[in-house]
Image 1 (cartoon, rainbow, N blue to C red):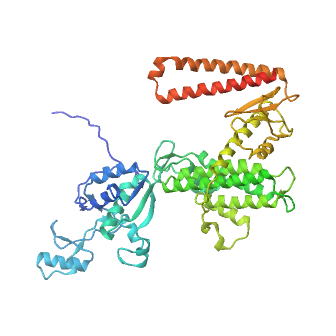
Image 2 (cartoon, rainbow, N blue to C red):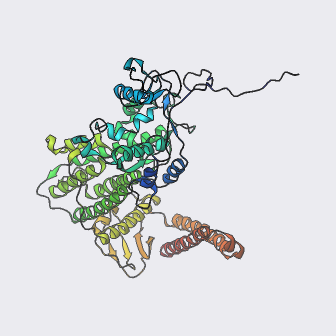
Image 3 (tube, rainbow, N blue to C red):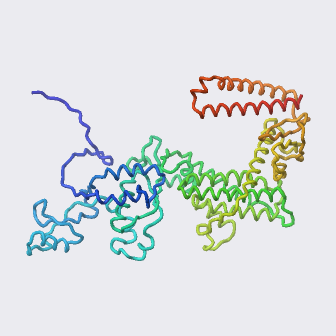
Length: 548
């Protein structure tokens, strides 16, 4: 009648690109309906024995397990574990399933009632088992728990604590291991499953050997260090969230490693004088850092307990980069070409050793190397088996006071930078202490700000630049340090701009339609802008008044 052209999508092999031609054949299936029930209850039941991290993957697990199909376990391959089915005749139904050929023969004789059958009459099915059928036995078979169910290793290690894997094989491997655990051992294979994100390329494709889109790991290690690559990826990868790979992440990890090395070299490079007493600024700074370390330790325990590994790393990163390197070492370091007192150095090194302990899970190579450099140690003293730092009471008040002192130091540094005031020149400093903040860190502020002294006053200081930290007012006299006329003009321009900005915000907040229709968070942001502008205007006016 007619000839038509049909466009058909032809399947091709991902690896070889050869055309795939469908061919129907008999397959072996495993009935799953009853097998999955204990595994569903173990993860999703009221008394769940196995926890998934992040919890969001419980929905994926539920979808797979509650919509389970019989498992096609046979593969037409020339390698692998052969299906334990034995044919004794030519028909499709002429088979038995048994663990060994000898057992198969007994079953075949019983089924056929033919006493003449021998092993030579049996023919094993040529299909091999699905790879996952081997893998689902892994928690048991790795300790020879199938062939030797009560051996010492399986009794000691099974069940284990944690399984770490990717969410793409949550069903193919994880769920099936749980099923096998209850089927063959009568109990769970592990307590917790931590599901990492997948590292993808910039096109969001999963990295694989067949696609050839994986970076050369050995080259990355050569360029950035093993710990650098590891930390760079971990910093950017929260549990369960995929990560788009970029070498800049490895560079970030390398930068962190360099920071740690430089901190170590700085400390080890200080000359020690046993006769020098410990400065009060160093003593209080060390006491503060020890409190901060204890607070971070509690935070780390919480993150680890909830399997938030990237958060645990970030907390460790901030402790080292911000608190230790940027603040503590800056406070305790001696003046140029001057020695340090021995008490401070010993404390700083002891603190550094504790830092290496909490960093070791993330950067094992770097931390062990530095650990061995700090002092000669035996294998029994290696960092990898060192005891985790002990928790102690936390001095929250001291931490809070130091955070306030940090803001004060930042205010001094900002004014020095903006006004081009040389740091080598000591400056005067006055404070109206409306917050009633303790003077615990005055010596620290004096050292970091290079102040002549800190004077407490009840009135504004004329001829001074000002800044605020909360309701506290701070004054830096500027006689001879800057051009007053230029500074007045600059402050006036900034005041005019800020007042204009405030008017625009207040106009928006006065608009009833905007306030009624905008989301709550947007309204809150606008009110914060208004408060910040009002505080800035007050400070600018105070600075202008003192200069005029």
